[in-house]
Length: 174
Image (cartoon, rainbow, N blue to C red; front, side, top):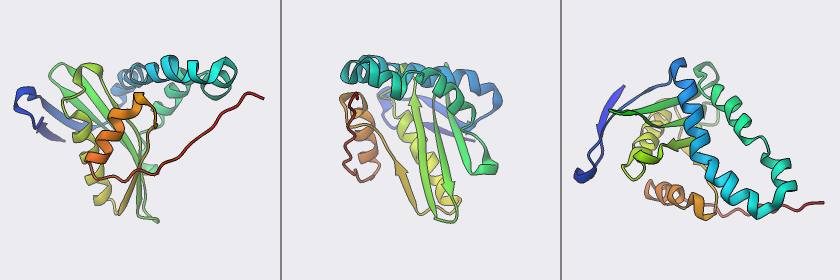
């Protein structure tokens, strides 16, 4: 548990960063679906068409319901930290650590719409990075899309000192 404040005085928000509890499962699942709905429905689907969309991410909501339920399992070196503000959950970060490789990986970062631009993502990433270091990680991997929807995430990761690796993925209906 740690209590932090947003660095910008005009947007000072007190947050509690804490570990995931089972009571968080439903709200974090809904937050994930709410966060990534615009990408899947407003960007990816129109870009690739119905056949590719259905094949690749046609069940994206159900995929997140399954994935979020399995994110926090310390016995498997996977963790979730939740940012809690006065008005509820502001966001969360999920990560894993591979102790043998001394490598960490951020799986999901999601911040509620009303808490974006208040440094919640920064605080969550810094918390995850520090915990990874404590668990022996020397390197962290964090990925995002190259599209306009993911531009704020790319800017955040670069501000945190991450180096981007350009990758291009192509889809084609057969």
